[in-house]
Length: 94
Image (cartoon, rainbow, N blue to C red; front, side, top):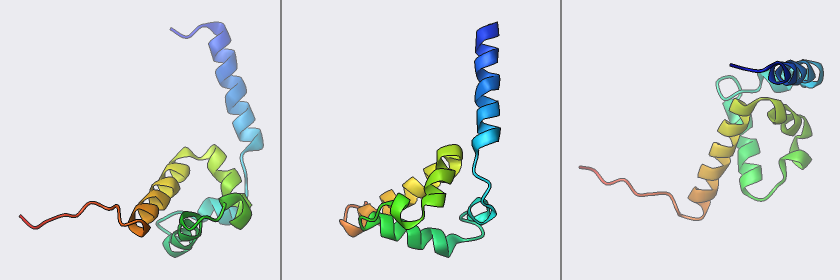
């Protein structure tokens, strides 16, 4: 069971999220389903050493609040980095 202080902390965190979450509609709409090409270009820039906060700071701020978006972007960057360094596993036909 959650104690009273934990409920107050949870409510406070929720209110902080609602009050401070970015509302840039272009960034909110930018997901892999609708803007795959844009996300891929950004991920390539980051994989090549660019800092996301320099390339598109609005997306950097957005990802502070939206974990799923952050996880997908980090995974894409990681795959691109592995591909560039020739570290992707080889799959052989069975």
